[in-house]
Length: 514
Image (cartoon, rainbow, N blue to C red; front, top):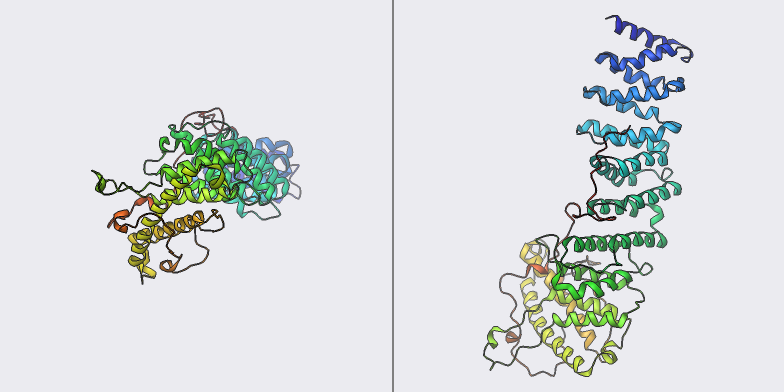
């Protein structure tokens, strides 16, 4: 048709011209080609960016024309237009192009989506900070689907960027902008944003990790008392503590979190409402406390917090049952909750180092005697269980140890050996806090034959000897599921609305804002 011939003629004049600039009318015809048929659109998608730099006075019109092509009904035209978008990304146009590409992440066409990713990466290498401006603009103001995909883009692609692109200036900008985003996030977004920040070079230093801990503290609402029956509040605390854990070290302390757990979590342990049905919430928080406790610094209320930990430990360390002449003696065998006791004993042992005379001067002689009776009783049951587990695992290696039942027994043996070591330390006179153990759910430093670890020397005892089987009958056949490590991951975002932090984010359907 005449229109197509005219279009091709004008395109030809631009191509053959030594200097395209005088041929403004020809470029305008190409821009108008976006309103033509499929052939004109395909040619326009190539020629608009090709001659873009020759007509700065038509820059806005050119970008808008290319955007029309990016939203064309024909997917092949869209892909061609998107592929060429980085050619518009120069100078002041780059943040706008980044903003446009970020919005285009919402496509459901996988090839188109990959093309948008490739285009974003290419302009990132031209101007990382400018590209970040476009991404964060959409994360803060865009539609939810765009925000979600922009955060995921940063989470997966930033770590692949070359070092010369990720300068200190760029990293500082990411940190500042991410702090703004964190004022209103879901739980899932919080995890992804922390992953982005944790991967920055500037965050690998002690001061960097300390800054990240400060961010998590803000999200965790540690200045507020915990409402143990509100699943959202419990969920928030779990998620924040999990994010903070890898950041703690001998130089970056967990003191505020450990203090909070002692003051608000332990007293309400039995009231905690789990955010996930199958999660043993009490065990989960005790495990978190145990993992944090080695990194606790100087604590203002050490004696008070240690006492809370001690009282909670007593709850899980029963007294021996009454002698057999009691009416219901046979049915009164206390349940020994090894997983809980491992966590509490380990935490007590860690904090006890900071106040070694706690068991000598800070509690009454009567209370100390009661504690030692409980320790002895628990230790006896422990010995029986350790022997049974060793017999069950004896000679088993390789695949035999990988069956579900044997995996549980292996973990149970780690737990019981750990408790054994810690109890022996506390039986010293004065109590010792020198032994080190690796928590049962943490990876062991070197592979060993599990059946041959830890000694089982008899503990001193001045209680009347009784048949060990009367002291404790380990569960026959089926082992407690709580012995295993339940890996808890947040599923979905946090519910409920709050002014900042993990609130239910308001719906931002503003449409495209090219």
